[in-house]
Length: 444
Image (cartoon, rainbow, N blue to C red; front, side):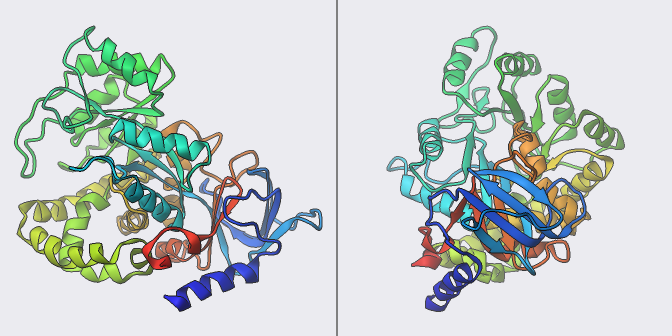
């Protein structure tokens, strides 16, 4: 562990001049002579320069940029610069527990996201008091964290998917309006509905949100400037949700292959669809390949006790579950659906449905293994994620005027998408994150 710390500090000192402390904005920062992968899907640019000032990207050039001698500089020779990754489907740990909320656990998870190069997250359903409080702390600079976007509570019918503690339950219109007013008053960044009757895999049937009610609620929020997303698991329900005017899909189709008509619909309508492959693949992965827990990112951000429990008790539980087998069969189906939609010009978006930074990198690996090119996978994890939020003018790519959320890599992610895990430096809003000082097991 001492050598890990020493290496991290050595890298910083060798590449930074006048390096700021964590949380201190760099007035002017120049990253030069770097291979730029800007997140738009354009080809990489070797020898590029990126100028950052006051938290924004001010200039991007294929050659050198002249700056004041007092500017901080990072020599990017032999390195690769990508936008900060964005996980558009998390459920931050710590929101629910028998003893109340656990903010410390949530902050460690947020530090883990930053350590892994994830500079923005969207929480798709949580204890609203908990997640919205953390969102406020992040936006006022009280905590070190990725950008937090949040739904607060999700919205469903009584007994519906996700309709447990903290959910907003509605069953009729206009009676729902009062609850929607309360939800809107808390300023959700996006509203999530659930629209799934189960009855698939090993799941029993449950109540389903009426389509007409879904349409009225989606319109209610859109008219107030709030985007919407929906949990749906089959093509029929996804089509109904799109027809009802819902803006995005929180998951891929997991119950079976998508039709060619649906692929064309997604391409023409440009409905963002979040990938969430790891949440299903993770069961069989742990059972069959527990050695993934030895990888550096997992060792850095997972508590030692958690790793041991995953290797033993949880792994044994997963071996016995029929769900593990079912999801192993269906994950390749979802991978192929995402490939088809992406290839046709649809908007696939990175999301994990988890609460851990390393999962986002596994999501990239699974998309590439399913046939999506690494360059497109990086766009899926950056600019497409910003499109999902409706913030593509502010985030998601390395272009002038956008927020300076960047990750410097030591190896080419286009040669091997797993190289997104070889992180040398993380920058959020123009601030250098000292990864060695984050509150994580690997730093203790």
